[in-house]
Length: 272
Image (tube, rainbow, N blue to C red; front, side, top):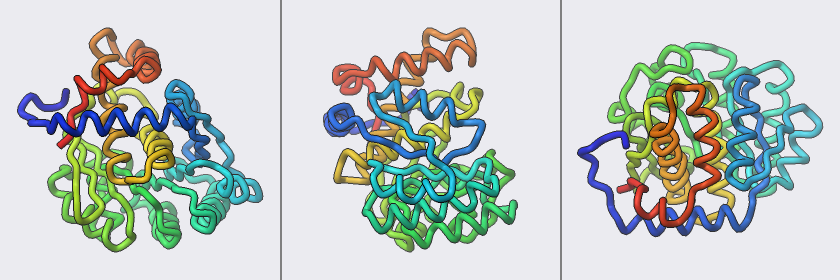
């Protein structure tokens, strides 16, 4: 639990279960164009959650596959030249086919290549944009942080998130101590999670893929994105309680994602 002072709405726990059950019923196929550091973690998170990962990220294949995938993740963590060509191909195809896709604009702001690429990809109307506070501020036209680390708070990014959501027509999720998820008009906050997530590489990146699976399985994109945060964060909380450090946590986290059930979610989901 991130905050002992967080007052959750217990009625939303049943909604989280509803979304989670749809993901488990549909077993979404998630295409991941993601950074090299996070690829194994991301694939394992999806597999542990009953989903199918497909790391199809080369030009000539990315577009056709995006047309048949359940959802697509585009993560800008390590943008190699081959991915720079494949990403616009995938997002254009996803837009054309109506495939939901998630943009994770890792490190946008100062680095010119990824910042320019992120702005180009926005033209293909992502379904969800997920990032830390600095990344969301930078993507909406402000000054970003230092790479993958956030130098701004979630509260500071809320207005930028709403602005970006309204401009793009997307759900925007800002990760932090208490996650903020908005479509520009309505918003959720999620207090599930644990700081140990920041000590294992690829956790935030795999959350993007996890969100993609959820939004592909449920029509209410805002609720599905919030539910993904709750499920992911709750699994982290449970895993941390039996871990001695980041190494054991990484393994336990996959186990707990796989072991999630309706009773655990009803009791532990923290949304409002």
